[in-house]
Length: 254
Image 1: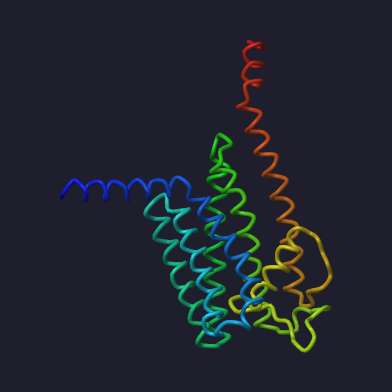
Image 2 (image 1 turned 120 degrees about the horizontal axis):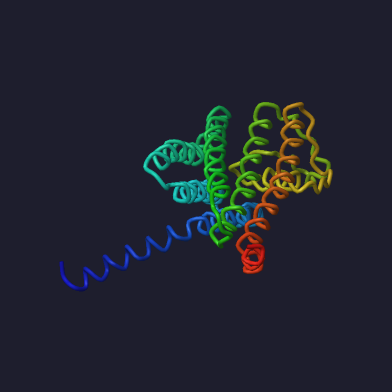
């Protein structure tokens, strides 16, 4: 190996170590791309080829899945299980672009839900094991909140596939029927409703009708608010326990 090749090889290893050190920031960026890309696909779809436009959301979702695998791959076991769930989910999401089968879409959604739930559990474990507030911890906590929103968007899409009357759209665009299907140009509707529900804004433009949709919406609102309350308490507690003032107080008490 020449000196130049050695430097190149070392540079790649350094870049990979940097990515691993900021794995939750990478995941957060991937999630941001999905959230921003969903409405942009709807906006620019009339000016692009439909097949290319329809591929954008599945590809962005695949990037999220792979970024999540990177974020939780601390051991070979977690990496293997994450890949076994993520790869089929990503493939089915892309295939849905060419093969319009409800069963295929539902299977892909279920795998995506299982994968995201697994990732959320692993990140929560990291959050409650960490002893200090760091930028990595803050990014991880934000990732959990956004991942929960995407997971519920997939769940609402499944409910819509199983029962198109599960939701009522009060302000649908004129001449068009809204849908809650995740993966196509209307993906932003599922994402929008999910985050509006989790933040308890409750605009009322989309109303759940079926019992499963209502139950999921209620659970998401409760879990979202509880997560923020517990997380803030956790971060504040860690910050206080490691602040210089807390250390000085402990010394004075001795």
